[in-house]
Structures are given as structure tokens and as C-alpha cells.
Length: 304
Image 1 (cartoon, helix red, strand yellow):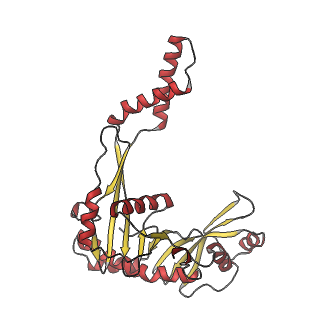
Image 2 (image 1 turned 120 degrees about the vertical axis):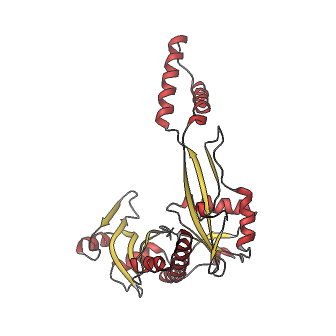
Image 3 (image 1 turned 180 degrees about the vertical axis):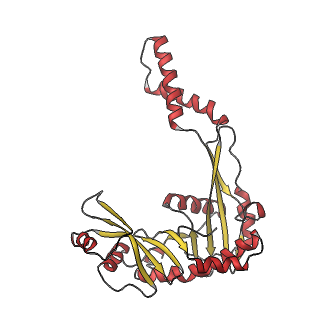
């Protein structure tokens, strides 16, 4: 259950719900299978999976929550093929071309017929609440997926004063400066991946992997005006990740020394989950402030 991505939301008011009371609130919107004509459903599920019925998991003051999305698998190509066949038959029979609205009506009829027979797939999104430091941390690679969880939590609780992290310095400028040779913060090591973009030429992107990022080749791109929008780093010999200019953190990987410490404490699946969660949140409670400091500190002016 180690998080692989981070999207950070500042809680602008104290979060004072206990794990037990939060569980009761989440139970009002628990996940469920899709009904006959529903293309998808979205709700809360137990972070521990089959090992628990609790919709929250608490450790060291942090509260883990998890959503489950179920979606019907109905490939667009299948719908298009069936629609094309029906349209061809009708047009041959009636010797005319069907109008756009008639084709749309046929498409809807096809969906109504196919949805109840379609297979389903499910996915989970994890997050945790840090009431003491006032953070909501979502494990999501995309902003839309994170916002989906935040929106459901806001809908479930009736209110959730939360906003995406904002900092004083432009992250792309900071990352670019590091590649230009300016001092990297203590405990940070630049690795071998980055993404460079030309802010004046939309679509101009260079992605570098397994490359010396301080080489003359990279320096030439920077001198030409490109900026680093993603940069792989190692922090404190405990984790690696890619820092992004939208303040998301991707490809997060906790190094062996951390994961082995969690494994040593586990005696079964539930205790392993608990140990993983405790160690992960401990490391992130140190790492997140260091990232914010590296980007000039948190900007809270928009929160007032």
C-alpha cells in the first residue's frame, strides 16, 4: 500500500473528526456494484480490503481512507461497429441517410442493451488525512483522479475546506536552477530523469531518461530557454521520486531500507499494512515540508 504518487491539499480548518466518526460518515456513501444500466459507481471502501469492514484505518494520528470505482467495460469500438451495422441496415431498407439525432438515438439503444451484459472493472484510490499538520494527501497520478476523491469526501462530509498546495516560488524555475548548477537543498540528489519544455513553443517537450542531467547537452537546452518541468531526485537516501512543476510528486518509491524496516515488524497481512502505513507517513511527514521549503515555502495568501 506504499503510495506511488502524491497530490497535496491544505486543510484550511481543523479536521476534528475521530476515525470512528469519520467511518460513520463514509458509510453513507459506501461503494457498491454497478446496477443494470449504470456505467459506473464510486464510493468508500475499507483501506484494509477484505481484512476489515472499517472505512478508516488510523495509525500514529493519521487516518487512511480509500475509494473504490467500478466501471462497466464497454469498448467504444464495439459500440461503433454495432451502430454502423444498424445504420447500414436501416438506410438500405428506407433508402435514405439517417440524421445525426437518429444515429444518437440508436447509439443510446445499443448502450441500454449492452450495459447490463458488460463486464465490470474496479480501481481504488487511497488517501490519508494528517489532522495535526492539516494535510490531505492523495495517491493519484492525475489531478482529475485526486479531485474525484476530494469531491466525494466534500460531498460526504457536507463541507471540506481544502485547497491544493500553493508555494511562493515557481517550481519550474527552481528545478531549472538546480540543473543550471545552483545549490540543491541538503539531502537532495539529482538523478537521471527530467522533462524539459519550451514555455514559448507549445508542444516542444524533451524527456530524458538514464542521462547525465548536468551534461553539456542538457545545458544547451537550458540555455535555449527550456525549463525543467519534471525532475527525478533522491531524498535522504530514503526515497526517490519525480518532482513536477504542478507540485505533484510522481513515481514515489521508498528505498529498501524503509520497506525492510516495515517487513521486520509484520506478523500478518493486517500488521504489515499497519507497519507500512506508519513508516510511510513518518517519512512523508519529513519529506513534504522539505519539498515545500525547497520551493520557497507555502503560500497561504489565497487561503485567507
